[in-house]
Picture 1 (cartoon, helix red, strand yellow):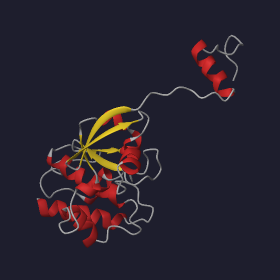
Picture 2 (cartoon, one colour):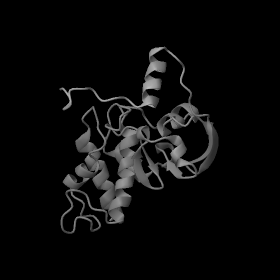
Picture 3 (spheres, helix red, strand yellow):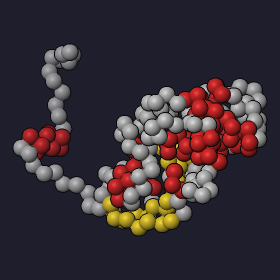
Picture 4 (cartoon, rainbow, N blue to C red):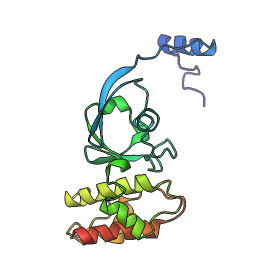
Length: 202
């Protein structure tokens, strides 16, 4: 589409220089690694890390916490969901350096092999997974869901007394879990697992 005055917009000098450097195959400067402390599952990890590294890549590639999965790497599937200061986030969309000193919980920190978190146990009891790839993100998201309901945070579907103990409907659970995709289609059992924990904690 032509511009109103018939000419193309001029590019700022800095952008023009960068474009020319890229075209010539020049190596562009990058920020030096930054020191930071990540508090993950109750343990401190002192790292020196390149500022562009996502929290997801830091967890998996630097610290070896591979429970958190890389799915779409675009914040669309929820497989990388972790808790930061109790809030669920997509770890693929945030930089590790943004979480210096904050409390991070991954699926590894929710329970142990001998004593799983109630939500982990519910997913097993209700067969809430098939291939299991999305399950860590689903479980982390569901744990955050419980805390959000306790804090009486409404969703798009919340009506009336749905935030009362034990009153969370299955539609409400589906809405609150809608950011986590399951390519195997285990949604009915995922909802059943979450609902069973809601009822036990009522």
